[in-house]
Structure formats: C-alpha cells, structure tokens
Image (cartoon, rainbow, N blue to C red; front, side, top):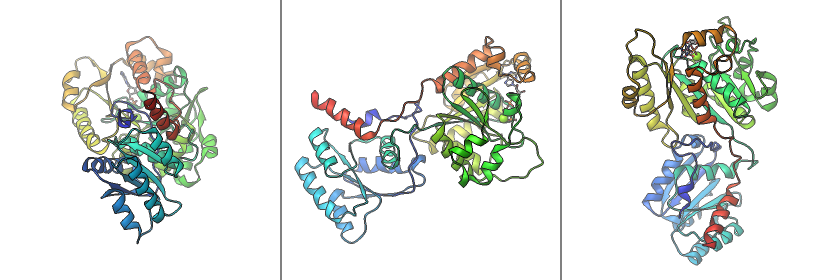
Length: 417
Ligand SMILES: Nc1ncnc2c1ncn2[C@@H]1O[C@H](COP(=O)(O)OP(=O)(O)OP(=O)(O)O)[C@@H](O)[C@H]1O
Ligand SMILES: [Mg+2]
C-alpha cells in the first residue's frame, strides 16, 4: 500500500485542498517518476502563488548546493536509501539547513519507526512514493495552515455556456437546497454586478455589498463579510451587487481572489454566480474554483462554447474534477435540439443534470420571488436541480485532519499487519 492511493480531491471528487501561500520550495528528486509527479504538483492551480523548483540528485545534491546557498522556505528531498543511510544523510543535510526551513521527505518505505524518527528529528512530513501530485499539494498546504483543523470552504462556480441558459437560477436554487436540506452554511456570491438577479430572485433589496468589497479587497475579513452579507435564510446568505448601471466599476482578478479567500475561511460552501462575459477575472475565478457547473441549452452555440471550456479546463485543471455539465430548457416546443447523448459525447463528459423547459413553474417562482424548489418542489425540473445540488453539496464537508496524525495513523495501521 502507498499513500498516493489515498489522495483526496482527484477527478470526480471535490474535497477542497487549501491554497499554498507565497513560499519558495526546492525539491531534490532521485527518480524521474517522482520528479515528474512533483512538477505536476507545482503546476497545480493551488500552487500558483508559490515558487517551486525541481532538481535531480536527491539529498547529496541538496547538501552540495546548500553549502554555498541558503535553503528555501520548504525543502523536499527524495531518498530510496535504507533507513539508517537515510537518517545519516538527513543529519548531514541538517548541518547546512537554515533553522526556519521546513523539510518534507519522500521515501520508499512504509516504515513507522523511520517515520517517528524523522518527525523527532524535525522533519515536517514523510510521504511514501509514488506520490499523487494533489496529495503533495495538500501536504504542503497543511504545513502553512495556521489552524490545522479550520474548515476549508468549497467554491462552486456557476457559468452559462452562453447568455440566458438559466445558470443563475440553477445556482440560486442549488445554494438554497444545500443550505436547507443538506444543512450547510452557504453564501451566494453574485458577481453579475450590473444585471445580477440573486436579490430579485430572493425578493430582497440588494445591499450592494460587493462594490465595497471589490473596491478595497485588502479590507475584507470575516467581520466585514458579516456586515456585507444579506441573510436569506437560517443558513443562506448573499453577497450581491447593487444592480443597475449607474455606477462604473472595474473588477480585478486579485480582488475576487481576496474576497473568495476570506469567504472560504468562514463559510463551507460559496456558490459563485458568474456573469455571461469573458474577462480575465472570470477565467481566473473559474480556474481556481473547487467545482464548476456549466449550464448549457441543447443548441449549437452552447455546444461550441461548452466544448471550448471543457478543452481548456482539461489542460489547465488536471488535478480537479471536470465541470458538471447541466443541460437546461430541454424540450422547448418546436425547437430543434441536439440530443443530450450527442451533446455530452461532443463535449467529452456526461450530462450531470437534464432540466426540462418549464416556463410556467419557473415564471411563477420568479414572479413570487421564491425559489423553484420552494414554490413547486414536485415538478421534474425541481427534482433534477435538487439531485444536482446533492451531488456536490452532498455530505457535510469534512474538517481536514492534521496531516501528521493521518499519515501516522496509516503507518501505524500498516505496522499492525
Ligand atoms: N428550465 C427552464 N424552463 C423555463 N424557464 C427557465 C428554465 N430555466 C431558467 N429559466 C428562465 O430563464 C430566464 C433566464 O434565467 P437566468 O437569469 O437564470 O439565466 P442566466 O444564464 O443566468 O442568464 P445571464 O446570461 O443573463 O446571466 C429566467 O427567466 C428563468 O426563470
Ligand atoms: Mg446569470
């Protein structure tokens, strides 16, 4: 058994892994396969702020280099040497290592005595090769998390493959369902600043809190968020724009990032309602979301755009689940449609939900300022959206366990066998 089989958050799952802060990391690998896996980890979106370099030659190469250079924030060294030799090599490495440098060892033995000895010597973590890139990212992130048991919120970004597909309606209903039935604190972040419909759909006055947050993102913390959020229900809140076109604003990717980081620290689920426009900050938000829900109608324009987005995400988010593809407004009378199976095949995925066209139910809910799932919970469209919400809001998010103890537990379990 190796650790890599247990890495969470692989394609298809959506366990959130925290972001790695701006740290300098150097990895000294021995095997080409490990070097490749570490490079893949360094290319992961959660490592975008960190600076990672991969060097071959294992611990001896590290010792040689650091005789003349200072050590980075984090040093990762691979060794396939037996226990005693590894410990001797690490002792020599310790002599050239700055005291504030953290060290992670990638080894080739599931050995609980070795693990204990390494931790006793001040090694931060021991991982058994072959490593899964995302597991390494998670290990690194956990080294820099202040409160190891703090929950990490999950960001679910909703985007329409073109305008008017129903993406916002689905986002709001999903958020409502997650908060109500799954009983998880959920915040809707309506980033359609001028035309956003969240406040309208929930029949409340928009506070416009987003503008305050977006114009001074460095001030956003849990206190400010609390003040800006509008309560929609016991577990549901909204951060929305003022609606309207009388104010000019520019959105910067880093502002959205800062707000989302603050939200992740306070709410377990953030539902981001993205506008139908292509801007660097929209791309950035999608790129860094834990889950993407792409809503399309069964027509050609939707198909072309959905395919382009899927192709992009397949390359740019290799360690993340592909977007959930939702087909909406299926069965508009007299409208020729691309069959769901053909649509899915062309995009290269499965259809996560197929929602029938039901203007009466949607229109009535809208006019009454209620969610479809609330107003007409029994119609087919409501059933499909409810199932979608449970697919990704499903379980209460697990509180991440401090990595040290989990690795130790696994090793101890092995030791018993
Ligand atoms: N399955 C459906 N059947 C009938 N009407 C629907 C359906 N889904 C959504 N609608 C309606 O379509 C309209 C557009 O929905 P919505 O604003 O959610 O789309 P959007 O993709 O967010 O649009 P935009 O591109 O403007 O952001 C709304 O009036 C909504 O009630
Ligand atoms: Mg919308």
